[in-house]
Amino acid sequence: MKLIYGTHNPAKLTGMIKALAGLPLEIVGIGEIDSEINEAEESGNEPLANAIQKSQVYFEKIKNPVFSCDSGLYFEEVLDEEQPGVHARRVKGKRLNDEEMIAHYQNLAKKYGGKLTAYYKNSICLTLDHETMFAYDGEDIHSEKFYIVDKAHDRRVVGFPLDSLSVEINSGRYYFDIEGEQQKIDKIGDGFRNFFTKSMNLDI
Image (tube, rainbow, N blue to C red):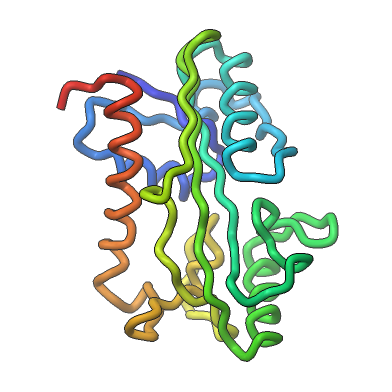
């Protein structure tokens, strides 16, 4: 079955295709369906609200089953007014590009001693038709806790700039430099696979 992912981010699309490998689903980005569709607005203050909003907006445009995801970035150490949440890429009204985003969080980590304990709260919403919608933000699709540090790795992944600042807590090494990076991805992928298996009654 072809299922549309409501994203224009190629890195997110690739990551979801890998996460759902083995399920009877063909995941395609919404831009492949209609290149004229603009990115949906995100006016919610929580990841789940934004995932629902985007999924419903895209469904009304394409009239086909579509799912959307949203994430919020949270730190244990920072003040409430500095908590990025769903606005991780927007600072003081400006949308940051990848390098600006890296620089901003480097400076924030430096302010708090060189590293911050972080996690991503992920959410997903699948809209099948006007009457059928499934939304979820359980902990099994949240990231593990990790560090955001003030020194960037040389490697970059377009669309995921903070991967260059992300360090595994136990080893103190960048995820880019350890084999465990794939294990982190697989853990979240299990949660997404369970979501689609249950909501779509997939036979696997």
